[in-house]
Length: 80
Image (cartoon, rainbow, N blue to C red; front, side, top):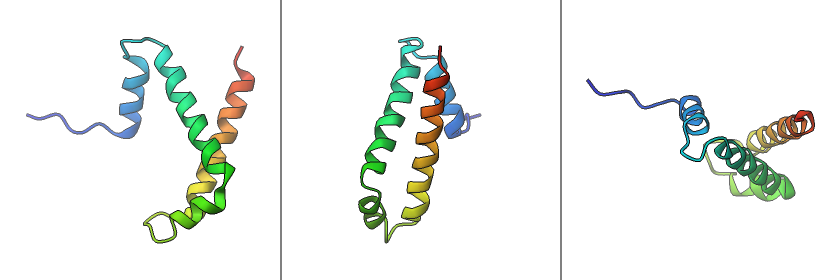
């Protein structure tokens, strides 16, 4: 019996909790999210333009990036 493909949540959880590099992987993942959202939000109109013929709305993509950016910023201010 083959194991089903993990969900994105399962994949991230396993990556962050079971890395051979320990908790440093959590820092790498969070940093990657921060860098990407910063990049998108530096020029949201360009991102929307690039996505205008795609399956996902550029407005929605940018809004998701803004939400994630805000959550990361709050998380970073709450860390001891």
